[in-house]
Length: 440
Image (cartoon, rainbow, N blue to C red):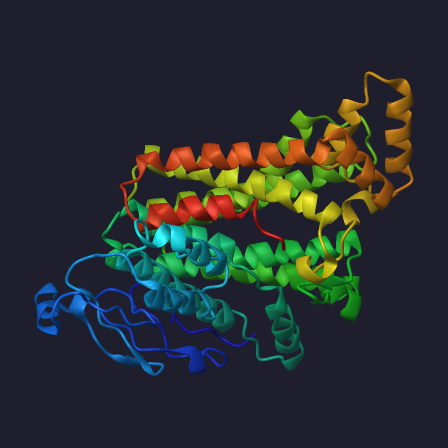
């Protein structure tokens, strides 16, 4: 592998544009992050000068100009459309639906302000930097390796985990987001995305999945051996990059998290076709294999921004609740989602003998009636997705699973009360709610 530069060192700053991100690079200033829209001030234009460059900056960008008013105020309908444009930018995928919800007409009058747009734009810019670091790390002097790395770019989806890390850092600082995110945040954001993508590549091998992000999986194209080694390569690169962040405690924390991920997967494998699996064991598996990485993102993001131990721990608990809710929604989508929307092979859990929460709840509801219990077990053993789905709709198991996820989201949002008020905290709350509204 070609020797890598110290471009990501927190002390030396970011390097120039990568081979794939040069077209996306944009100048950055020391003030508030830019916004691809026009905010019309109710005051004369001269009044904006008193607010300083962080607010009144005006520059050309993509055919539009940014002109912040001297005082916060709600957007009008024209300006709300510009907020949507922020959500459409390359780095701003996961929060597109959040911003659309926040600028719907019922919220315009009271909730959406220029501060929300600044957080959205700053998040978008930071995610692009995370993508740049990710791309630059996965560069080899071997064309065969580079070809595989280009293929797994399609695995990069919502970037929820780095987004939560960045937002956790911003939320700790309240309104002072301009210095909340550091190069270490960006580097570790790329690290956690590599770890997450490695788990996806390995999951596709275990599940014998053919489709991921509406494209062919690595294992379906190149075989299981290549997919396993590629997943290992991603993890190796993740820890190589992490070691350059200059924070040994992060190395230890993410090392513990990857151990926990593997433990959760091993326990889940040991319970395949175990029709006696109960809710307690299910949640223990999910906390390990899914939620532990989400929790680490929020905890690390907060601590890097200066949060104390108590707040960092609470942010980790927030991430754990969000991660478990995310997995429950995944369970539901695997059963009742649309393949063209979800973008991956469905019905895998039942086909592989994995008991998910809706199935566990359905079996539990039939315990009191031997005939119903036997019918439910027959559907599970027969891998009858359509029949089981109809039965679960009748028993209310799907709705009860959805309620569990919503309860977790409510608990996660309540944990944010320790953070100072501000748009970043509101975005975190909306991010938590979005995991149970998503369709992919």
